[in-house]
Image 1 (cartoon, rainbow, N blue to C red):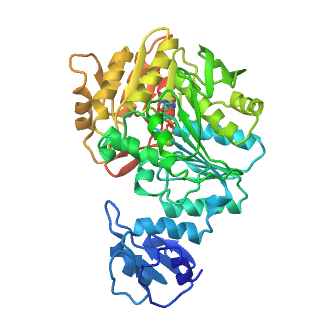
Image 2 (image 1 turned 90 degrees about the vertical axis):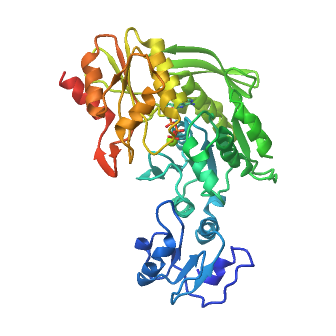
Length: 486
Ligand SMILES: Nc1ncnc2c1ncn2[C@@H]1O[C@H](COP(=O)(O)OP(=O)(O)OP(=O)(O)O)[C@@H](O)[C@H]1O
Ligand SMILES: [Mg+2]
């Protein structure tokens, strides 16, 4: 595409009178620049892309998009906000891919990864080619690509959607983080369905207040637009039992479909029966009852199932097919994942890393635990610090044997993080074992028949970040080894 053609997607007041090279790719990482690339200078948290424009030109960049003039011998287009322009240019360059897909976005504090996998399975079982973008990976019609962020920046995102279109993907399901919404990474995404799971405390390091956090989440619903296309209606799927839904309802003109257990809702769960191996309940839709038996446990799993059913129903899938898909689902890696190595006590690895998810998972464990409940838990460094004392309090309140350890300390001192956890539980009894492997091993060695150990916080992760080093670490493997060596 010619540069001037591409620039037409930006607004007409952008002054540009340079030459008109052919643009063969758009990059914001100078190391990826090839001859013909348009290099976009983005000011990041740690580096400023403007400092790398020269190197991009050396690598063959045909043009630069920047926020200030740069003395370079290729055309430099100046805009007020390169990150904002990047979303527009990426959408234009990749041929507006989200207009060609059915796109389902999921936001909320907890349950996004779980719910997105459920929804993807339902559409896949319909014989569709599916795409998925989220915390664990990006999937494009069965091909898996590793990801860095839950929601990538606009350039990667639109490129991924473009690949999905090329591969014939019909429905794409994506986790939409509040950061991505706030930073405009998803500008241009044409959502058909927006799903809300729940809103509880997290990410206050970034959003500062719960109001700001909620406002960022509400953008997903506002982004469903204000027009009606009666052939392709848009839907906001909201949790009737979470008060934030009221605000999200007001943010959108789209159809509202609600789900819930406690309050009145379009799609409800009734007659819930839980056992250690699964959950049975009735799905109530418009006066009809449909029984379902899922292999997942915990009230929170019912919410995720209801959110998935709602998203699938508004997309036109028959309830009996949705139920058949969900009944088959075995669970999602690192979410309430059992470690079974022949031991006579239960070991569960779960990604709970917020106060709410830790509380939910511990409550679920307690429902079935016959004896002691151990929880091995830490809090990540360089992230919301206000969660630390709260998570420690929940661990001490709901477990008989809390063990505080390190999560991903990142650049922080692991002992300082532990001190902030301990500040919430003065006078309570707990263990502090900073080394995560030692902590897990200690709990495994203490446990006796009928006890339960919850290893919380890292779930599917296969690494631990200490300082800037990324070490191999997998809670599931560490627990298994400890059991075997016991
Ligand atoms: N609906 C829910 N409500 C509360 N807690 C939940 C819910 N679903 C899952 N959880 C808990 O939260 C943990 C994380 O779940 P999941 O990975 O699906 O959430 P997420 O929203 O994708 O998180 P992240 O923002 O880190 O990507 C699970 O391991 C479980 O403990
Ligand atoms: Mg996730």
